[in-house]
Length: 119
Image (spheres, rainbow, N blue to C red):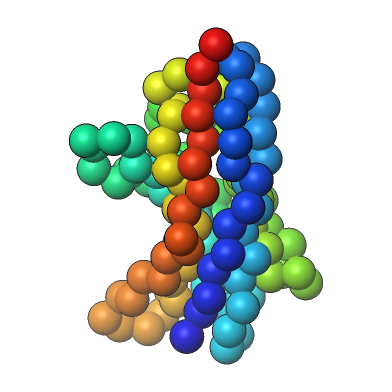
């Protein structure tokens, strides 16, 4: 079992920045691939960024160059630094974890944190 607790959401003006954090706990959580997804109203949940246990990253095209995902394996925490925020980034952001070698794949989710970009 992996438990995920997000923090850091809020309201920001266009062009502003926010940093999301997600603390992971549970068995050997440092092995897990961690990531962020988001879901805007009336839209499907979509990938934002992921990072493997060795730091390999993957980003959605819509956030490349603006968002940076990182992790601290000592603290078992994953971060999402969001810069140059746009109104279309408004969504509930969810932390995600999965073990890269256990099949079938099982996803763990946090409770979500709201990010609102508005003037």
